[in-house]
Length: 333
Ligand code: NAD
Ligand code: MG
Image 1 (spheres, rainbow, N blue to C red):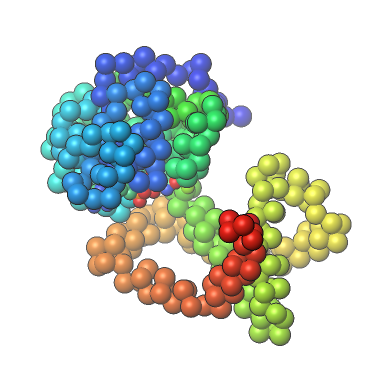
Image 2 (image 1 turned 30 degrees about the vertical axis):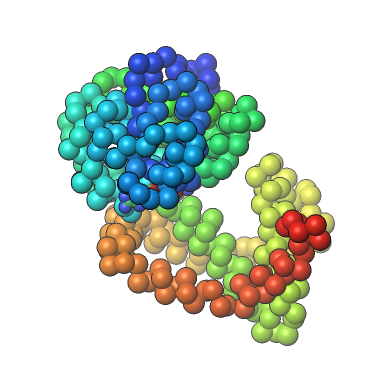
């Protein structure tokens, strides 16, 4: 069993007298900056002047600095901007303001693991990756708990990098829930694999194909939508709460028998072979290369796919159905 770290294993005093710069005030940046500040950590926020985030941070009582100024002033720099923009921002605004003894922190390993960012000698490189979106990081903290996280150390010049990462994890509330140690490589490869194969890619394709098949066989799209999409939430909640067996235990015997005997006909050795190819592309950097190329050419593939999807029947039906089930007091049901 892996070793988990909790509040008692982390010491916030390590951050005493230090300044933490949170770069970016988006999904993770805002949540982590607010949690750290509420934990008594000295936080500055580093942003592009004039943007939406600047106003947002001011509304929350921060006095944002330009990114280079925040980096110069801070001992610990948390890079909480989108992965694809990190390399340029690092090159222009972060790297040259990093001195020996500073700590560079990430919430995902992509840019470090794939060498899109190469920090100088003498800088500790650590990761605290919350296993939930920013709203959850903030809300669970406000409820007195936290969101679990992974921590990792890529460079440990100070000899203290793990303790620093754990202190940050404590400041954002993660050690209340529990923190597991990983490596930049493991976190990056499994994260990309998970989102491509199961969480985002796999699930979306499974739903889409099943929906289109039912509709083409003459079933009402609204009914198909409920059966293959809407109800997924109930199933996922059961799985998250108690594992796959907990899900089987809480569906009808008909669903259990049908599911246990038919599932493997849909996801079979073929699918596994494809998963292996996807993992290989992630590991050898093919995917990272392709994604960065896409980003630097202004995301033609992604834009086209987003546009096409907007008018697909499953989206149109979904919009109509959700509007139908709005609570009559005007709030969404
Ligand atoms: P995000 O998209 O919410 O980041 C938006 C912020 O980045 C804004 O403040 C914006 O002003 C700033 N920004 C965008 N482009 C910029 C640019 N070119 N120059 C300067 N600033 C720019 O990002 P996020 O989803 O919070 O992700 C941040 C990091 O956290 C990533 O490494 C991501 O992988 C990781 N992460 C995210 C989640 C999540 O819930 N979204 C979960 C775990 C880890
Ligand atoms: Mg992930």
